[in-house]
View 1 (tube, one colour):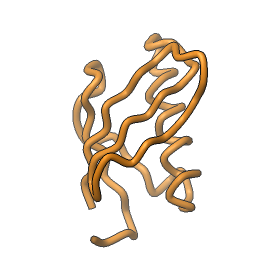
View 2 (tube, rainbow, N blue to C red):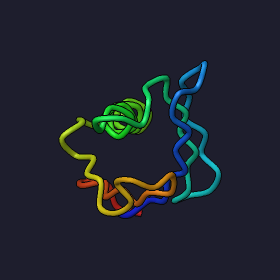
View 3 (cartoon, rainbow, N blue to C red):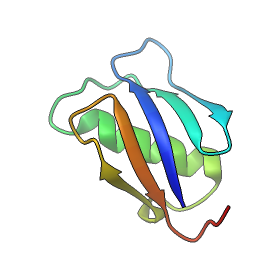
Length: 76
């Protein structure tokens, strides 16, 4: 399953907000440097969806605020 994620790095509070079935907003405390924010987003999504972090893969948008993640093992 592919999901669209708008990322807000360097936020004061970390959170995951589900906007629709396949659209999320994720706020992380980490800065958008050295892939730190992307790693934090993967962890946040895995925790929110109650799956392992290895099931969450960044498909597109590594350097952009709008990203597409592939969630393995979760359909629909």
